[in-house]
Length: 111
Length: 115
Image (cartoon, rainbow over all chains, first blue to last red; front, side, top):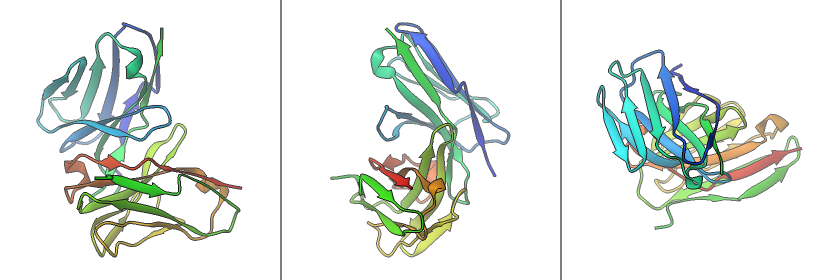
């Protein structure tokens, strides 16, 4: 079935450094969603990208959808301790009307 | 609105026992789903429903049953618990009938241990 691969699995950064996580699919995605999960919490929706080459920004977060709609990235500028958590991408799959998640990137910030 | 609620928050079962994880939403969402989360495995879809009376299997449905008799409720039943079902279970709902087209609202999760 449809799978989305996400890298890296873990990322350690110093506070203030930038962070990027990448999501890749072997097939074209109709859209891609991004979620954040704080330690001990539940996933929270961040954004959905639909158009080829789309770029969206939310304060220090920049989301991109590739031209071929097979990859996406999330970039955080100047990380803060509040950015700690796991970031997941998700795309169609896991069933006719399902949503399949990548394994996530754990962001660990060292003060 | 309470959003998506799940009960219980924690549960310990013995192998072979059965139980039902409850999920309810008060947002009149058509789409509801169940995920399990295991370390290093991300979120895996168990079952989902696009409306009352309609359910379908996700990636890892074995050992679990669901039903959707109302729009609000989507319980997950473990028929005969096994240690491999030790996990954190999340219920989610979405306004859209197609999960990939809309924001998923997740419940707080149920942490299940099977001994």
